[in-house]
Length: 341
Ligand code: UD1
Image (cartoon, rainbow, N blue to C red; front, side, top):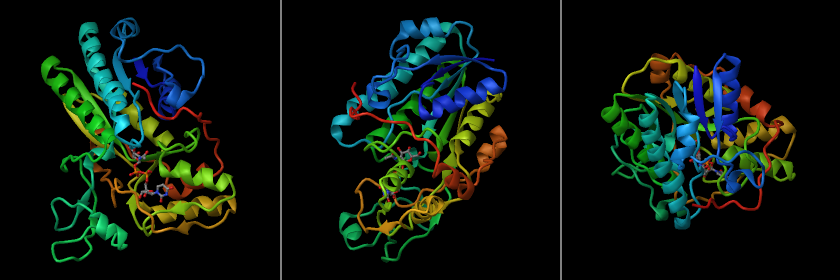
């Protein structure tokens, strides 16, 4: 198949490009080389907000794999326009260009952040108060004040974004869903959990925790684990994420389907830090009790639908993948970290 791959120069996009090519697909690369992510690196800059560039690139394309996005949780409210512009306006321009080109299939990079706080036994919606966090009560509490236990999050869980980034990812899904209704096209939205692996960008305020821990260890410092370290996540290796994309590109899904892309083997943040420290013989992690007000406590996915809809099962267990990641190359980042509109 001929695949237009947006965000092809990024951490995940470049892994998707390699996976598609190794399975005989033709890849049309498309990337804006945003300075916030790529510094001054010189690629051919093509932006998804440019309908003319898309009209050219979409010629003869069977399916679009849309990875281009401004990522990270966002540092402050000044980041909101960049998320809305690149992620939401960009997706809207792309969907219109696909309609012009008669291209009816989209694979969309989404995120587990659309679920917000995740799911807890016996509670519908939870929030964590700053007072509780300050007092070291990190787990969400029941009405009776007891800590709630987490449950796996299926794709039909309520969608409650908590950050500008999360809001922009959910809006992308909504635009894509509306597009399937209007055009009869199909969309697979891949809700990535915590992606890690070779060539992950080095630490910036926009990086995920695995890159932060790696960067601390490279400086000879212990990873700093926030809260009590017992917060649960699902870490999925980038080669598995690339394979999930390839399976979605090759699938014959109709309408709109959202699927979790995860390893199915949850780990605590302290376990992640310890695995990375041990793999390089570095200092053991320090549990600091600090907290970030926007963080969610536990977010653990169900891998069942990805298996049913795409035949996807992760091949890399976090224990093996994190040991490999501990010494894998990271991509250099530059001083200009705030994404511009
Ligand atoms: C992360 C991404 C999110 C992405 C999602 C899925 C960021 C900021 N968040 O969400 O955009 O969609 O993965 O791939 O990029 N922590 C520490 N020490 C640190 C930094 C963080 O202990 O130095 C803790 C945090 O408090 C949190 C956990 O690690 O409990 C995970 O943090 P992080 O990776 O930043 O955010 P996620 O919520 O998992």
